[in-house]
Image (tube, rainbow, N blue to C red; front, top):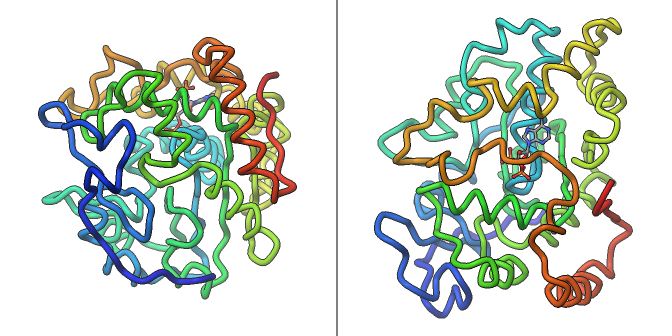
Length: 315
Ligand code: A3P
């Protein structure tokens, strides 16, 4: 994989021409920095040399997603598989603390790199990075990558609501503004299109299990069994059924170790929009106008013309 040069610069009005950077952020909301053309949290940019030189190990499993693609869901599934369906073990910490988030930085708290370095092997780690920004050692160590992709329209809607309620990311502006911002890729971790295509390509040369949110929704048991096979874990039928139940949206929504219940209101205001919001396929139809849908589809066709990757937009 190509390794990019370290570059971190302030998001300027010019670098962020739409939505998030155009107007001053509401009080307390950060602007994004940028790294090789990809918008990222400024603290991540500042930590970049340590992130880039992170030392992966051959038995690391890396959960990779574009934001809002079902990261928390697949984390809970993986943990339930690894803990062989032991619910108590899966309650040991909030799910977002169980797997170090390698590019996460929020001083003075320990960074994702610090947390990963302190974790005993075999490690399960998490990233939202696009392939071109992933620390080189993951490729060199031939790690396993578990990628979950979600259709762009539902990702956009979910990300919009997340940015409304999360205080540590830029405010999204109006839905119409956000619609343009997302299509332009001016959101944290960059364009959805390049992200899903990059990881899709990576599966031809690396150990990538590429799953789809919509497939997990449609047939969770089948997809959970794929994950088990990929990570080399055999479980009996009753345990698999237990995992299916425990990782359903309805159960996870009420699970304080999954629904971000303990996150301070200064970080996330769940009264604005819950973290476990809807958990459906096709909520975009409640947000996109007919005109937006046409404009989106036309732009999408152009951006996705060079891939065999296809998505389910409704079930
Ligand atoms: P919505 O906002 O559409 O409801 P991430 O963990 O990557 O931030 O993704 C969050 C999205 O995944 C949210 O989508 C959330 O509701 C959904 N999600 C989380 N757990 C889920 C589950 N068990 N089943 C279906 N969707 C789930």
